[in-house]
Amino acid sequence: MVELWNIYIWPLIWILAKILLIVIPLFLAVAYLVWSERKVIGLMQQRMGPNIVGPWGIWQSFADVLKLLLKETILPTGANKIVFLIAPMLTFVLAFVAWAVIPVGEGWVLANINVGIMYLFAISSLGVYGIVMAGWASNSRYSFLGAMRSAAQMVSYEISMGLVIVTVLMCVGSLNLTDIVEAQRTVWYVVPLLPMAVVFFISTLAETNRHPFDLPEAEAELVAGYQTEYSAMSFALFFVGEYANMIMMSSMTVILFLGGWLPPMDIAPFNWLPGPLWFGIKVAAILFIFIWCRAAFPRYRYDQLMRLGWKVFLPMSLLWVVGTAGVLVAFDLAP
Image (cartoon, rainbow, N blue to C red; front, side, top):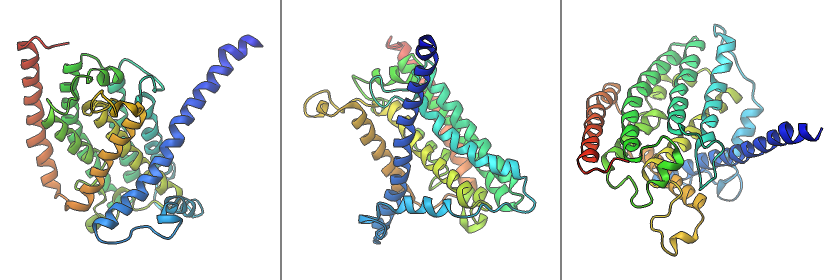
């Protein structure tokens, strides 16, 4: 019995506890990201934003979730019901599964695997499936068009994102996310690789279907894109998945270019703050830029979006990979 407890039951309880320590703060982060987005955009447009439910409207997101929980899930007549219901679950689960390898502090990671960045890239690529399934299963032209746009957009920008990641990996010499952060103790990679950091951030906007690249849900022509036929909790799962993806992409940007949990300078008072707090501050700063882009920029046309991905970012990131490799070899800086 003692062996059963020590070998199987206790490790299982410990893993479940660690998963809850990731999932619960992430749910709260999503709730307050939605609130802060509405509040910030409201202030940028000289409005109040949410201000009724609780002080400064801080309970608004929880009220919205409760409202969606109490509503009926409506299944369209011609929809493939099983695929229709699995699609939002898939998007939701993938948004949370990616967090298994993200280190928020030194040693603060659920699974410190050697191919962490590849795992993240694979999970972010799988997000397309949930959207395509939703668009196809809805039996609606609007949903299907939105899903097709989304798939094309995500695949297009993943290539340039992959090449940016390759550039960083050449400088580090490891696929482990903790090693990538530790390699930035002398200088954050945003300094030598600034153009690639910009390309990566803009690609994350396209990857998460956010302004100015939210073509899949362009309400002017597609009602709400692939989410058109969704209601109640199935809609809420898509919604939570989208915002959890935003936080995940911001975390990737922070890990690859902004030194993860490392302070800007290893001197007082910067190093008084714990690593996870620095990580949170940096992620919040990137998320603020996400929101700022939504308030400031008009939506791209679809042809402009594709041209930017294939004719600007792809050649630029390819050239930068070659250039970085040349510099690392020429100056004997390769790890």
